[in-house]
Length: 411
Ligand code: MLT
Image 1 (cartoon, helix red, strand yellow):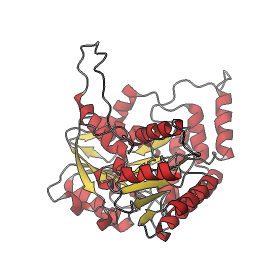
Image 2 (spheres, helix red, strand yellow):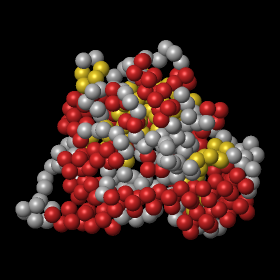
Image 3 (cartoon, helix red, strand yellow):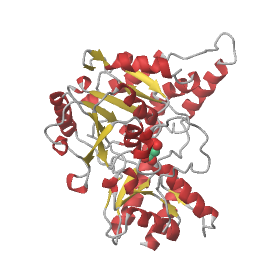
Image 4 (cartoon, helix red, strand yellow):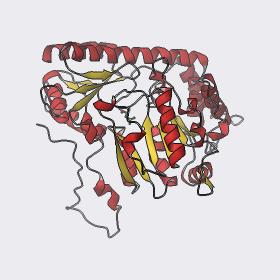
């Protein structure tokens, strides 16, 4: 079986410096899952795969951006070539036109978020790592399985982590009782609709988390990157829940629904009500931003503003429908073979229980080598993902149909 998903730290041959490097990296158990998968897939392709490998691993958009978005992007780029409209450094928190538009996004969901509390960034992955800069000696609670950047960045930042088991027996939706009663002052990651399992919290369940956070003085870090995929009735923002503005930061991304994986634009909401130890979290975040960032480029922010227009949101809804149909097509093949699979309803992902006693890596290997389909081994999302594999609906329709045929033949 392929040797992969290991952390390679080999500097024996060329030690030339005498500086102390961060020891935190040695606490990482493996390489970053998507990078490692890509390495394995690339090696397999170069070794002479019998046919084209269909990549259903990383959740990368394949549909083009809405024409209104590219037009705004191009117009803003053009503005930069005229003295009258040229712009230098952007405001570090983002232009007010985009923060206003983001605030409007929440208004349309029935939630009230002030533009002042919105901070524009180049992506949720960056924000998820950067947030640790303003946290001190608190435990970071991470759903297991969960998006690997939460854990990897916490470890690199030297944080103490605690798993929140998100297993089949709790429908992959852990509730506060999974944390134990004595947890206080923790930072708690929640992702809904969830990556990788596709499970999504109801408003009542999110309400229980908000109550727990308020009672225990904890901070919820709510990843809403897949909000656009939520089925009707599933909340698309934590701020749909009363009290969340006193205990939750939300991360929103344009990557998946508006095809911004390459353009890069996202935001986080840090409500000004959030305080701890006499300090406002927003003040620390602004201080951090001003020291560490020069913000996101003007054309990208104009493109993001256009992505929040009515026409682009309708376009994004169509993209989301397409990806979810792809995911449903994949899920049906597994279910038809009597293999447990979930996701697709509120998610672009399908979370599959590996059949016949295969490990995550064994099943990844089997799909790659026998069907030339690349997925993501479930244990790359944490030990709770052992024995699972994730496939994505982000492929093109033609690739997804071809993958469904190959899977039907193989399984
Ligand atoms: C995923 O496939 O889980 C994510 O899209 C990867 C990422 O955002 O880094």
